[in-house]
Amino acid sequence: MVYTYILKDEKLCLYKIGRTTDPIKRFKDTCIRGRITPFYLVAKDRELELHKKFKKLRVTHPENIEGRTEYFKRGGVFTTTADWIDKRKELPYLSPLVLLEDLEKAGVVKYDSITIEFELESLNFGRYALALKIIDNISTREDLKNVLRIKRKVAVTEGFIKKILDGYKIRVSFTEGRKISIKGIEGLRLNIVKLNV
Image (cartoon, rainbow, N blue to C red; front, side):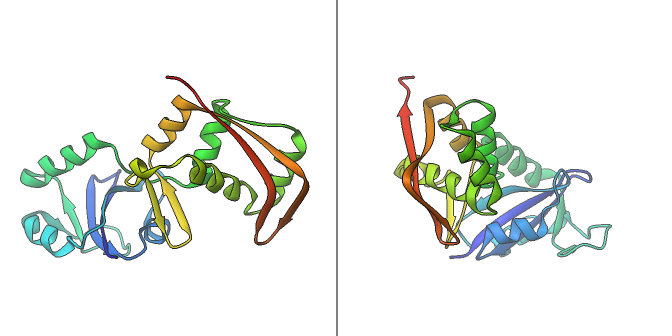
């Protein structure tokens, strides 16, 4: 599947329009925290259509960065389109680790013991595996546009995080026969309570 994306240069207020088959990797490779951020993503190949539509607004990025000729400045139809996208607030897609951090800070995720936190923290994939388990247990069909799955990679919108923050409490524990390996964490148990909101 081909995705069309728009990245925003927050400092210069320029927008890059491109396409990719792996938006999570593309965002990871191209984005710079607080500078170049994801702005729009759609599961269709619309790159040429958008390049044509906004061709009068096309500029070369003044810095020597990848794809520097595919940038557009605000103006006319592009401003209207950008304002419409901005109001929807569906991007950026966020890493499962950001989801877990937000849930921990808000007290939505609680651990039965400090040992669990330590063991998860000591593994590169431990916290990520826990976040994926939370996503898998809570996401429904209605969340298709809020949970982006490409092969084995997953990202979520702020809207999905808000859904969990506002409607769930999660308790994390280990069963007696837990086993932690490169393949994952066996015996990690989630007690998910949906709140009556």
